[in-house]
Length: 76
Image (cartoon, rainbow, N blue to C red; front, top):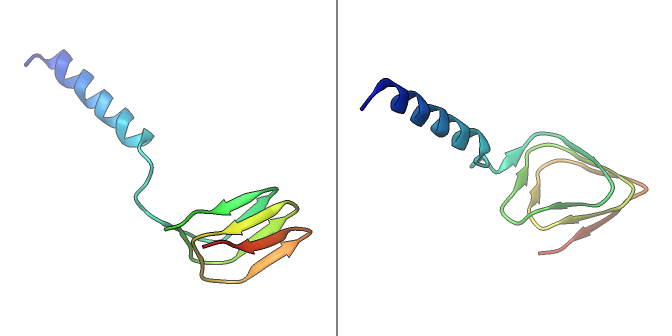
């Protein structure tokens, strides 16, 4: 294998790793404006603050939920 192929392969691998979604399913404090959904399987380890819109919770929130002009719905 020549040096150019190794460098090109490493560059492609690095690009794929940065483009791949993280396997972590927990977030710290989250603040959103407008419609937002906490998807099933996702956990927010902290507080969720919502301003306007509708927040649908299919996952978990391990903290306080503050809704300032927003509707909050739990939809399992």
